[in-house]
Each structure stands twice: as C-alpha cells, then as structure tokens.
Length: 99
Image 1: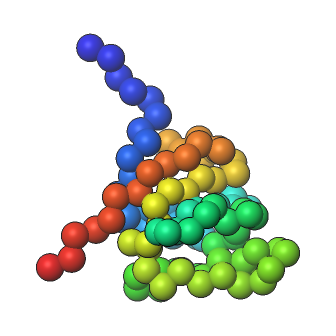
Image 2: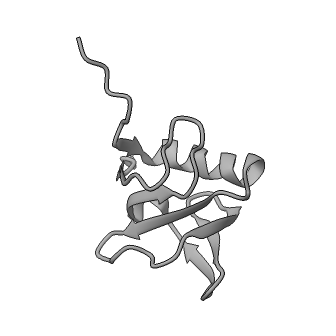
C-alpha cells in the first residue's frame, strides 16, 4: 500500500480553514491563487481579512484584492511550508456543494 504525502485536491472548507490559520497564526505566509476563468495572480498575497464566504488579500504591488466567494478559487499555492501544505505546490480546490 502506497501513501501519498502531497494531497493535491483540497476542499473549499479546507482552504478556508488554511486561510483563517494563516491570518491568525502565520501572517508572514502569503498565498497565490487562480480564480475560475482567470490566470494565476502574478504576486503572492497576504491574507488581511476573512469574510463569511470570501476574503480580502493584500498585494504589495497592486493593493487590496477581494475574493467574494472562495468557490471561485480553482487552484492555490503558498510561499512557505505550513502544516501539511508545501510551498510553491499547486493545490486543486473542489467547490462546496450548496443546497
């Protein structure tokens, strides 16, 4: 039996938890993501605030970036290791099913 150390498929709830943890415990770690139908953000972003569904991020070159719903995030990466997440590794995000 083989165990995969790097999980590439992450749920929106796991992403949300990661972003809250970065905000509260490791504000020095930045995230970069690709939204549905868009290219990757050019720069890594610092988590500034999390809302009920989304978040507000800071790009040192372009200012604040708002994501209204994390379900629009298709992929993400972080710039430093944190918990089980590896830096510069593209994680795929599965959207939450709304009822």
